[in-house]
Length: 406
Ligand SMILES: Nc1ncnc2c1ncn2[C@@H]1O[C@H](COP(=O)(O)OP(=O)(O)OP(=O)(O)O)[C@@H](O)[C@H]1O
Ligand SMILES: [Mg+2]
Image 1 (tube, protein in one colour):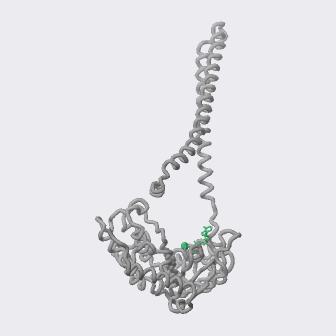
Image 2 (cartoon, helix red, strand yellow):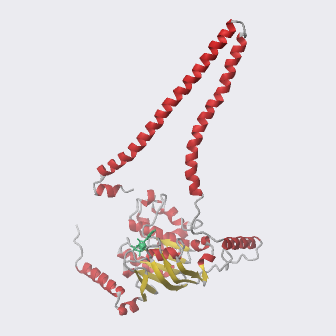
Image 3 (cartoon, protein in one colour):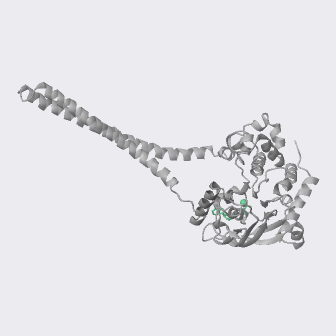
């Protein structure tokens, strides 16, 4: 997968050397293995032949001296063969079982790995009770989620949330934030500040080290993980596109969607334009890991997928960073429709994309340092103000002195 990087840094020789080192280890292990087999088998066969020879010699002498008839000798030889054949087979099976055991150990350790984040016993019980109620149709209205709690997410609150990937270094420190349904929150700040970590916590890929995340006032650890995550749509910077048609890729967001629904979602996401220019349109193959699409096109497909999924919470982490300004403006228009009635977390380095967000928070070194809408933050004259000024200056100088073409 890193072939272009290897080529561009002319690392073919170094890579080949590293590969040779690894394969040499494999080579010497295989040779040892075969040597053992080459010694073991002849020994066994020689011993078996010697035993047969010995039985024939002694039996032959007994036969000539009239102690046993020839039929007894033949019967004896046949029985011993029948006796040793299965033993030999057992040997083969034993070797095979050892190989299978090694593989099984690896697979089982993966199957038995317990996820660090999972539903508590009380949540699992609540899900079972709700399933029972649905079967008896006493409480199947869409007001209730699969764990019997509220189905609608009206508010997400982070209360004194701190988080660390490892105990030595805290990544988020005492974050307080309340987002209501219909609100879009933009998160900006320097690289490594903790923006992605914050949304990972909201999605419960990780849980806060201290503090709480509350959904409608209830700690989200008391709600079903499946319910929460099925109501969150994520669009990531390095969006993954699977091999298969574009249509299938967008439909991945909601498998029951019709072709028309897929196309409508693509239009809202601003993906319809480039898809129609492809030779087979929506049926065009995206290639292995979406290799036939550009980075920006992959982001558009991934955005369309999230629009189609119709989630209550939309998380966009640098979702349109590879898209040109014109397409981005097109997406902005569609966004108003997409965001209505949802909670959205939008992380962006390009500030022009988040100007219209209801609230913008600046995260630096794991702390919220500024908060407010665009105008409020501009009048604060802090980090956001400086950043916005810098980017506007860059953009206007690019417009005045466009890069030479040709
Ligand atoms: N899985 C992880 N394990 C350990 N540390 C991590 C992990 N993911 C991120 N970090 C660390 O946490 C800090 C915050 O990372 P995060 O990805 O939240 O930054 P960010 O604000 O999203 O940055 P960017 O703008 O570059 O995307 C960084 O110092 C990073 O090194
Ligand atoms: Mg990030």
